[in-house]
Image 1 (spheres, each protein chain N blue to C red):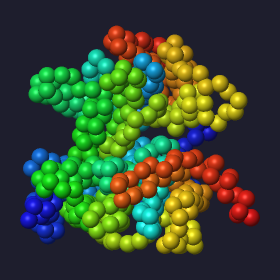
Image 2: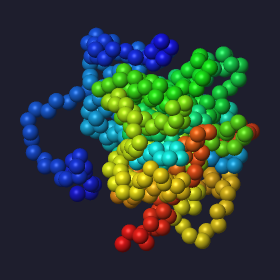
Image 3: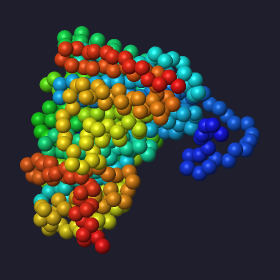
Image 4: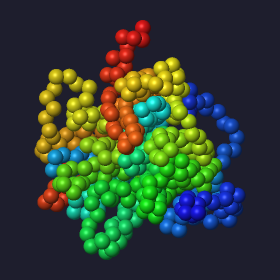
Length: 267
Length: 238
């Protein structure tokens, strides 16, 4: 099957032996990409153990709130824009939505580098699929490709929580994929350290028959309230709307201004 | 005491000093050599600046070890962190630039170098290069471009960015002076080259005052369509 060959799936047991058994310093993923692995050490704990020595402190960009939900008129995607490295805010305008093609979006939460790399690879595979099969890839297949990429590196310390959002022949699609290779289809998801706050807001305001404006407001509110309470989320809200003829970028608003607007209703 | 020692443990509580018995010291492949880099993008220029101090622990290895490396006629990279990885990384980038030039008969653009560096860094996701990179150069339209990276390859395009040991001190200052953030009633004047260079000098002088790993001298590389100009300015040597 075309998809099976391209997905890069490897059996889990075989990979484990390669990583920990033979002492060979690298892991073959696909013929043109190798990852260097420290010899004789468990990769997921390696960085943390280095950080305890002297002044070495390797902080990677992290932290987020993202949310997405399906409703009558499509799918709404809202993300924050803060990238933190330890306690330092490395960026206030990080881009956490990858525009794979005009009908597919991917969100990023967790480790920024992991999300950027694997979702960019996913964009490449989606493009190759379209060239090989003369039709756009379905949301289900795209999310499965990403899920299988994660499965290949399970247990090695990757950190990625992503939502694949699109519109294909079966209608609007929303899948949640994470670094454990969990893949779930659903109506509403939120990821990242601020996700609990976003779920609270979304659950209390969600109706399947919302108008488009109400849905935009719900997405904005979810992210705004999450950034208000979660230290590792902040910046601006980037809002996208997935419609039948593709996605549109709705707005990009600063969270501090939004929270002042909502303050009147809070107390 | 004349100096402050680090007496706080991981969770912010005070560490207790008592002898616990034999402690295993494992070989660490990394070491921290200090240094700060900074890049600013203007309308038709880009500036990449770094200090030239190379330190390790309480010692200074060299006062003349700049951290800006010229990649092409339109791109300069600043690398700080572990000097060994900085050297290897710049060697690898130079080799990849040559390969690209031979295969494609043209030089890599700044955006392409940034995307390539991201994948080079991610190739070491499980054993990272301990390097904080910032690329400064001109994009295909001749406008200034700055790309900042984390050690494993996550990157984005910025207008200005500070990296390295004094980055947390410099970034808020740049936000205020270049981004006009956290000020009210101020005119947003675009940055011209002379003002940008003066700002970079002032900002490094401040960094040298408050960060022990930054000082000795400042190397500024100014990238314009006429090429790359280098300037060296002395800083505090203490």
